Amino acid sequence: MLEIAQSAERIEKYLKEINLPQEPANLYEPLRYFLALGGKRLRPVSTILSGSLFNATEEELLPAAIAIELFHNFTLLHDDIMDEAPLRRGKETVHQKWNTNIAILSGDVLFVRAYQELLKCKPKHLPELLQLFNKTAIEVCEGQQMDMDFETRDIVSIEEYIEMIRLKTSVLLGCAMAMGGIVGGADEEQKQFLYDIGMNLGIAFQIQDDILDLYGNAEKVGKQVGGDVMANKKTFLSIYARILANEQQLAKLDELQEYYNALAKVETTKQIFSDLGIEKLASEAMSNYFLKAETSLENLSKTCNVNKLRYFVGVLKNRTY
Image (cartoon, rainbow, N blue to C red; front, side):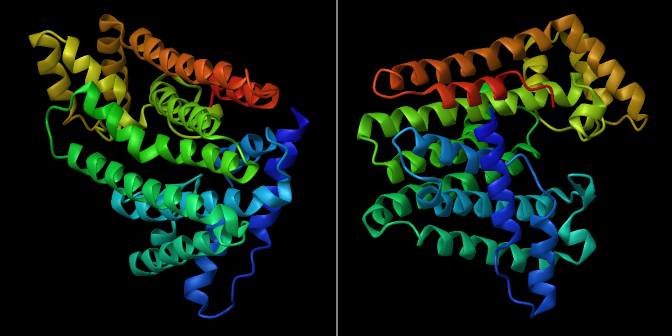
């Protein structure tokens, strides 16, 4: 839909035109660099789409949308440090290109700038916007801590994993959509439907990411297939595999943890997953969360025209990268 693409372009333009001081250069240049790396901008677009359902203008919605995107980028800056990631969107991460201290401080500035953008919203909406934004910011940190805790644990349940991605990833999309509803003047039920749509989309999106990491097309995904396997990362697929595996398969999965031959590690893991039917199970779980989002969308459709939002959900559901 042209309107979605146009909103994404305006968000990109707005981010490029954010007035950042020239000095200190080592504080602000990394931010210009990072924001210029681009991204899907799904969260701010969802804010604008959600608010437009209630006839809010893009001008009214942009501050909340940009606040969400700046906060998201703040989390990415800090996540890259914690994950010791060398690349972000195919380019050097800020802590690699500059250093860790600069990346931490630049991320902190993005967090504050997110609040500065949010304060541009109409005063009557600010208490509710700030309450939701603050709650979400804490939950994202909780999710990140859970993710880091999982790295030192041998066993993680599916329920724990879903709760981790709900907090780390999904609540921010729920927040983005509900904030659009707040600015648009939606009622309590409508705002809850928007939040539920975003939250369930977020969970489905992360499970989809887990699947695409191992089974996606490398050129479309934009990264090496099997990266999660090579990093011994706990994903929906790897956790489910350990639940279903027999003793022999579990022993092989443990042995694969120490493999240094990346190709052999990925191919052998895929074979075990195939024997266990893991891709199908993960796809079914993903579809279930998309269905939950679509159910809330249909409930919302009883009170307003949701065609634009329905299209957006369809784009996420059918993505291949």
